[in-house]
Image (cartoon, rainbow, N blue to C red):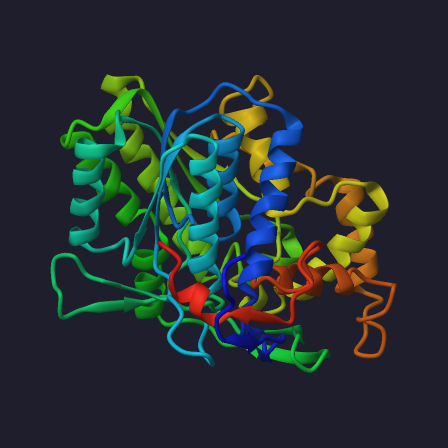
Length: 405
């Protein structure tokens, strides 16, 4: 047994709805748990070479895991994560997710390359393209674009930076939100975005960068015949439209759909496919800071617990790729979007959710009446806490700094 290095105590730390700590060993166990889930479903025919933009957590990570351990794909992830700095700053969960995923993929005989940096920059695009040409061993079959970012520099003007905002459009909206740090339900008013904020959010969270990635990869000659690319959207129920579907995020998703049509034309000559998939509501680092949205999740999770329809990101994305992207069970809407969110939006589910939401108060939101316990647990698991099989309360700091990205 190797000698232990300096042991550092770890514990859950929240500031509002932002996690300020990480359990690297819990992140490792979460990777193992997700891999086990996919392997338990068996292998299926899909991509052999996949690039995931935003592959270090949540939907992007789940997409990478099902590609590798379901489809047998070699994978590349591009993500912007922080390594450990000192004993009080152990880095981000995504940093460890990338590392532990790579280790497990390599054990399985798969290539797994992690690029840590800003996916919006030309330098990152050049690095990835060069790697594919020189070392990846073949062209891409699949590109997943799963990016939630706060800002993006204008590629045509390095002095201009666009910043995304989560706001309504046209009118203020007031409703309840959750403070995970204090276990509180509180009233929040969301002010409408300015026109400049709407446009900036579209530049950051829309499909412009997705278009650039696909265009440059194609021009570089690294896309395979029949290549597929997919971007994740969200629509949700009417109760969340004002601050999501009809808000700044919705405007960005509309822009992404316009981009998908441009990309499709670009891919026609290689029989490629550009897809928009409408995802279900899940607990992510982004979703907990979307105003009012967590309250909807509390009601939804409880109803899904009762109906057996609740899905975590790995369950949702494995089903998407296994059944719809590469399977024979495609569910599409009138706009051609894949709709794995159909389970969430079933009329009977939504009727029960609306009824339950009307009953939630500051006094009962964290009781068995709602799905608060599951919502909070899934949030903590994003940072390696409350993970089944990982009960450590301290980590070997020296060992963490020696991990190979």
